[in-house]
Image 1 (cartoon, rainbow, N blue to C red):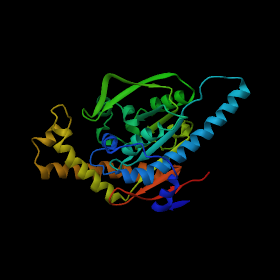
Image 2: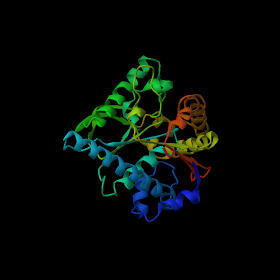
Image 3: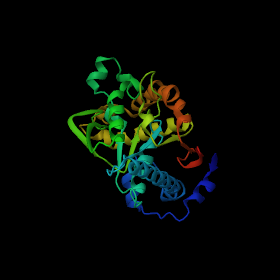
Length: 301
């Protein structure tokens, strides 16, 4: 079913808004204009819906454990968040992590980005894939599926790689520790990719999935706006992989580089690999030109 913004916002019911403007500033991505009104109208109803799903799943797991005579904690409820580069999926994932942790029956919420499972640059270079970074083949999909499957199987603790956007590479020797949460959010552009024949996909372990959508031309404009902001901020750090874009590169030349990267890499990936997975999502958030969600498509079953 499809709901317009007012109809969806009404489903918030009495869910309280716990975030402050300062909290939201910490959660927003670069150049992301998400407001407290957006949180109230879009993300509070979504957190309420997900809380109902988590509660029902926890009850089902408790019934199975009682039948088997087991007493351990249930496996995490796993949520996938997908969408294009620059569409705002990372902000969506961080907001959900914060809002879902406010509910009393699942206070422990972890967030993992699939960027952590990108092959290191040295591997991508050796395979001729540096210009395909973000495409399905640039990820260590076996390691990603193994991580999610072990989480689903009830692993108490897993250590995974860490990707740095500053260095544009996996950080050697650094690890993110994920301890068996109540909810695990897995965010990434290709998390809804189907499996190849005879294999499992990461999405096979999701209890719920969300796709953040917008018109391609809008996402392109957001990508270019974000690139310009990064030139003024993160790229100015001498440690940044793209530091030259903030110093030695003229603005017009830098913008042309960004536009070409969008046209030859990110848009191709969006149209060939990311957008085709939208129909696999349990819920789709459609964004308008101003980044505000205008409608929501919900699968009821």
